Image 1: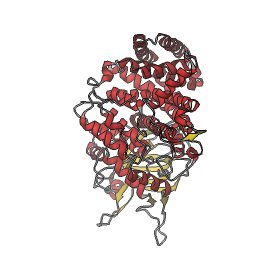
Image 2 (image 1 turned 90 degrees about the horizontal axis):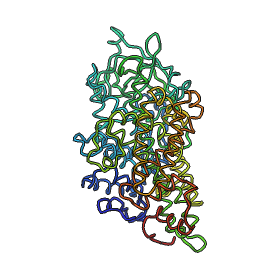
Image 3 (image 1 turned 45 degrees about the vertical axis):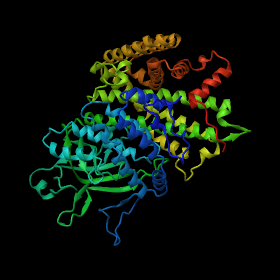
Image 4 (image 1 turned 60 degrees about the horizontal axis):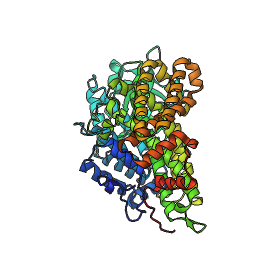
Amino acid sequence: MEPSSSTKGFFQSPPVIPPQYLEDSSLQRIISLHLPSPIPQSIEEDLSRFSRFVLSKRVLSYVADAERNLPYLQPLTTFGAENKQNPLVTSEGWRALQDIGIKEGIVGLGYEDTNNRWNSRAYQFIKYHLWCGSSALVTCPSAMTDGAASLLGKHLNDVDGAVYADARRRLISRDVDTAWTSGQWMTERKGGSDVRGTETVARKLEGNEKQESDGFDAVGMKLGPWKIDGFKWFSSATDANMTILLAKTGADGKISAFYAPLWRQVKGRSDGEMELNGVRIQRLKNKLGTKPLPTAELELKGMRGYLLGKEGEGVKEISTILNITRMHNIISAVGGWGRGLAISRAFARVRESSGKLLCDTPAHVRRLAQEHVKYRAHMHLAYFVAALLGCSEGHNPSDHSIASSSIIPHDPHQIKALLRVLTPMTKAQTALSSINGLRACMESLGGVGYLENEDPALNIARLFRDANVLAIWEGTTDIMADDLIRAIKRTGHSDVLSALGSWVARAVATGGKIGLNDECQRLKTLWDKLSAELKAKGKEELKWKGRDYLQDLDTLVCGCLLVMDAARDSDETAIEIARRWILGNDSSGQSWRAEADWDKKIVFGGPVVQTKL
């Protein structure tokens, strides 16, 4: 499939990379669906430039440096004193990639569209998608920075609103001299994902005690009136400028949320010397993947911060961040997976086996086609949730083709209900699918795919080990299943299931227009069975089968999205992908040669350009 005239420039790659490297028909469908048509010239030029930049020798050299020179600690000064000034050392490559992400607006884009001319979240995450494979996981602090900016934005009218406004301004800035990144500290040794196990304690300072310990943060804002003591066991973005964290307050020990800068001015010094704000980095974690990302165990002793919202409502406050960070997790999954498939496609065009190119070997292409169908389905799922998030934040999709396709409901209550119930499911299923998909991409390259080589452009092994964190970070699959059931039962299953049922009905009705009657009947049958169980069964039984419901809902929603997307323009490849996703092994009604021809169209689009390696 050739790119449309409005997106053709987007898929051009630098000469040092095979021109097919970023040809991604699934991403092309996403662009045409979620961005205005025609695409504004500024967006098209930005994405076209950035798609080449992420594969440039400069960026890939930063990735190699970040992987080679991992973060480490210098806990002591030359004379043996505790190093409170700068104990964490990160690589030049890591810091350069951080700066690139800031300048490119990987966070800022989500906050720059004040006129609602297009969905800024869609634009942000499409660019984010391109960035994932070349970012060396600076996207992790980006996710928490985005979440913190969203949360602080809800508190600008509070008593300490000026402090929050200055921090938020820095979080969404593209100026590297001004911009901040944020951490998010929830996990503790006792609790893990269960924040009820939080042992960190915060106490509000009063009178003389507060005056004696008052000071200023790194940018001259007064330190907060709360003193925080405790231990955070798994804290990413250790090199951030601020953090959002949870701690217990009051005699009842309820969990509250806090904003705290990571750096403060050393008292009694006039030279601007800085020190950590009551934080001691105990050690860095040794992880399977995400190795350039400094993840640490942190001891908090006298950390100064500000209470966000009301005491005892920390979980409610932090949920704002979780909605954002889970969205970043989702796009990281499909973004990394998409890069792996791009490498597999490029390799198949140039690698010869038994006298034939892999792209001319039907069995090889068949396996690639199976992975591309799964990828297309989860791409639509990911950006559907991204669009719901954008709409929930007040962005108007009226000038998008997505509005005319009826994929997004117009009722704000339905949007909110769908976002709540689909976010945990999408987070869980895209993570698992990308892990399995990248493993398949490694296999498609044979021994080359297994190598931890110095060439980031071809290192699928790196993408695979990094992807494994996505099924754990921000909640494991079982936690997401539990959250799904709570969303249905606690929020009021009639509202959530009614919103989902209405949306499914629209999709099923759409499928008849393009001849997908059997497929849509199967979707309807699946929904009838699923909704009946979710209504009838008790919460504990539903939790026991939680993973099954994640899978069923994934199959259903992805199928509906593929049907509605195909109905936009009756694209024959989109129809075939929808048919294969919904019917699975029952979809074969043609000769194997006809199926093989479809395999090739699904993977490579148009005619295959062949260059032997």
